[in-house]
Image (cartoon, rainbow, N blue to C red; front, side):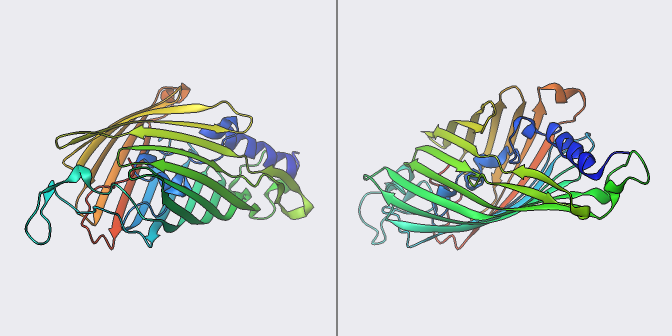
Length: 343
C-alpha cells in the first residue's frame, strides 16, 4: 500500500510534468500578455489615462486530461496623471478656440506628469487536481525622465494558495489512507517587482515574480506534510511601435526564466489598423506558435483571442491552446480606442 505522503508527492510531481512548469516554472502560460502587460510587470499599473479592467480565460492543451486552465481578472488605474499634449481620439484635432495648427495624433501623449498607479489581480489556475489561487495588490510610480522618455517602478504583493484535491485522486488500493480527507493546502506570501522604461513608441520592461522564496509545506491530515516553495521567475521584454499612416506595427520580444531552469523567449509581431482591429503572431521557442486577433469595439470595450499551435511533443496529443480576453476602459474621458503607452 502506498502511504499518503508518497502518493500525494508523486501526484504533485506528475502535475509539474504535464505543464510548461516542468522545468521549475510555476506561473501560468499566457499569450495575451501583449494586451495586458500587468500580468508580467507591476510597473505597468496606471500607465494609461483610464481604469483598465480585464478578464481572461485560457485553456491549455485541449484534449489532454488534467491540462491547465487559467482564469484571472485584473484592474489598474492612475492617480494624479495628466498627459501633456493629450488630445484624445482621431487622426487630427483642432485647438479648442478653433485656430492654430492641427495636431497629428502621433504627437499625443508624449510626456506624462509624475503620478501613481494602483491595481489588483485575482487569478485561479487549475492543473489536474492542483488548484492555485492568488490575490495581489499592485502599486507603481511613474516619472518623466525627458520630454519623451518615462520610467515607472512597481510592486505587487499578495498571497498564493495551492490546494491538492485528494478526494478525486485514484488510489492504487481502495483502502489507501491517502484518500482520507478532502485536500491538502499550502498558503504563501507572494511578491513581485518591476520597472518599465517607455516612450510613445518604445518600451523596455524588467520584472521578477515569486520573490519570497522561503520554504513551506502542504498541510495534510494524519500529520503528513510535503515541502514546497515558490520559485522566482524573471522577465525581460522590449518592443518598438512603427507608425505607417493608419497602420501600427509592433515587433517585440519576451525573455523569461525561472530559477534553476533554462530560459525561454517569445518573438512577437502585432499589426493594428486604424487603432481598431489588430492581428499578431508569436513564436515561443521549442513550445508553440500563437496566432492572435483583437478588436477595439469602442472607447469602452475591446476583446482579444489567441490560438496556440504546439510544436513540441504535445502536438501529438493536444489540439492546441485557446485564450480569450475581454477588456473595459472605465472613465475613458479622452475616448482612447487603443492603449497609447503599451503594445
